[in-house]
Image (cartoon, rainbow, N blue to C red; front, top):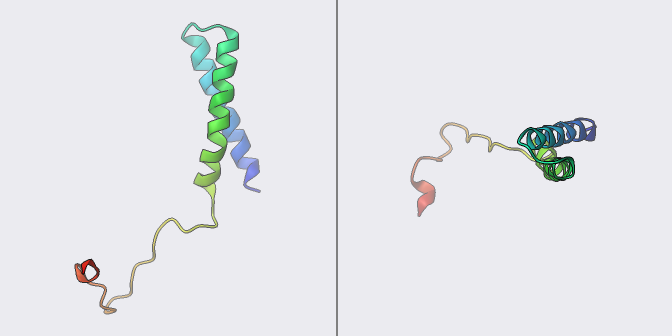
Length: 74
C-alpha cells in the first residue's frame, strides 16, 4: 500500500531533478543520471516519511504522575 505512494513521489522527485539539471544547461546523459540519483535517494526518504509503524511523537504523561521538569535530569 505504501509503495503506491512512495514510488510515484520518487519518480516525481527524479523527474524534477533531471528537468532542472537539463534546464541548467547540462546535456541529456547528465540530466538522466541526476534524475536517477535523486529518485534513488527519494525512495528511502519517502518510505521513512510515510512509515506508519513507528510513532513519531511520544505520548504526553498524564497530569499528576510526577513527570515534572527537572525530575529526570538526576
